[in-house]
Image (cartoon, rainbow, N blue to C red; front, side, top):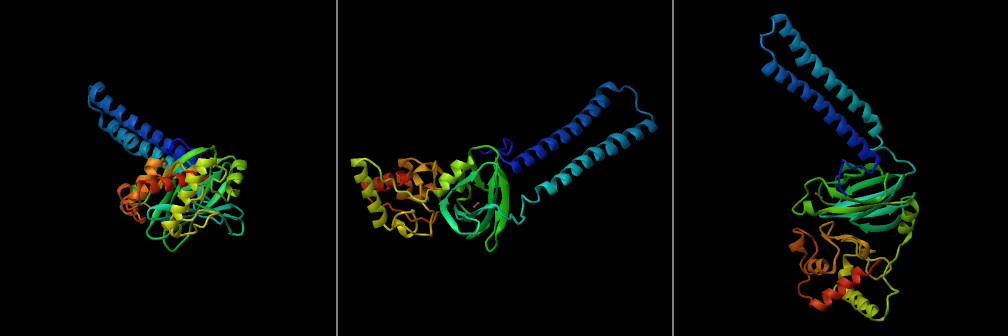
Length: 314
Ligand code: CUA
């Protein structure tokens, strides 16, 4: 779900309300103008007296639009203080999620009150409902913009600085977030999923630091191990980390719990075995400009083993 007009967050609710009030205000003016036009073109037989015409211009052409537009302006200005903590603010005591935008994916780090890392993920934001969360937005390379239309935002992520954004989800569910600032060839392929969970479920997810699907049955276990071995042998672990395994790379997206992610390549394709094989074989054909090298030299069986291994990570 990705719609600013179907809000599931405090901030998106304020934006949606402002939008509808503006539409209604614009609609009232439009109806007034159309009514006057109809009257003048169809109903009015005699020209107005000069005095009456002057009065009409003052009322319909000046006073009425000024009153409606002034009311809308006053309403928008009145809303601003309510939005201030949303943009910026200290966020003392709030849960912190640090999001780093990179070409073309999202590094998501969950921090405790002292700023220590609890867990890292990529292209998926988990957040509890009915709790204000402080997002710390960073960028590694160029300017990106973090936006979850259904919940709130957007705010730019700028290299060399940390922007803060407070969001509160009000309804559990799965939502879609996007990069809202053109950042290169794959800008349109830089999305992420958002899971708003009940507080208990969120805590449970947060504490699941590991990982590798171990309790699998006989045959599957063999192929999973083969996949993990291939993953490590091909050097995937130099760029990607999977908590609880030897893979501890920090350049690319953290793949812990990859099997649970609904999409691959930052929201580009559904997370299926076929898509995963295609992506590992030649990432550039799915996502132009992606930093990951192609592994087209690998035999199908090895690609399949790696894909199965990743799909098995929970
Ligand atoms: Cu990142 Cu557009």
